[in-house]
Length: 378
Picture 1 (cartoon, helix red, strand yellow):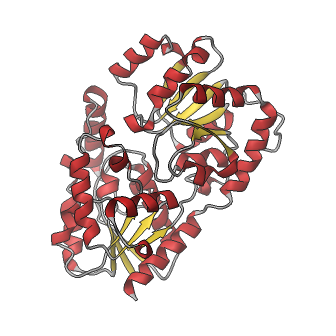
Picture 2 (picture 1 turned 90 degrees about the vertical axis):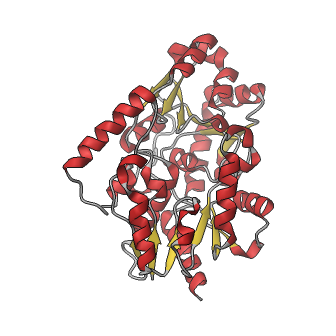
Picture 3 (picture 1 turned 90 degrees about the horizontal axis):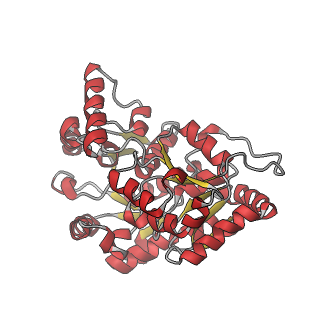
């Protein structure tokens, strides 16, 4: 069974959840004789695509890497799309028709005029743009693109039961066409040892936030909610990934009086693992998610999780996390104080986190996704 994946998710950021999801699937299928993954070969700054070994690097890659790095540093812009020729290469593969199922990595409808009668499967990661359009200036365009590709899809995959419910509500698709397939931890491959000495207190007096700082991630309201704690030195906040702080973010932190207590770090997987392992807690104040991969990352590193009790997050975190109302400053502050003040509770959370993590794996995700491909071809 030949499965064609496209370029869309792999052409922008260096690290991001959706390309990680597809790269983990593809890596699983490389050892599955029943599936042959097919991808276009192109230059990109995305590390997950590069690690797949689809395209050999050449001398022009360093030049393009430097252009992107400079544009991101000075203008906070990513010109990758102008440099990769990726869509053209995917279209060639589509028009060759030498595949059984197409699985686009995002929902742009460019492929509809090239796919012919071949079936395709869509993964629906979240419906934040539908539920909170105020956070997405281009929500109308996103909605239009999604409706175009949903109309002719053979089957759908949703990252969680919550995402499945949202998708059915907003797009009126048949319940039986949507298959829930949970993801795995992005740190699975590192075989991180579980913490043995749970009596040892974290040596870092910081809270950890991971990923983009988009409006719906709610990190600015979170910082506002805990500013008294940050100002008096009870802890600091490290924002891992998401790019360097913009000037408007720095001004916001200065206005709150917490500039010295909030920092940003660009991280590799190994550095991120270290940050999780030594943090007081991982905090995830997002108002909406489709799955919440960082929760599993934190569990795998023995890091307590304090997160929003909204969307799919309780579905993934189960009884192993502390939840708060992401719009309620008092609720946020209470949850954070719990992990700072109650060491016994944190130790119990770590143990529960290891147990919750065992419910998720990329092997299981790949197997259930393969079942969806097979259903399409029945």
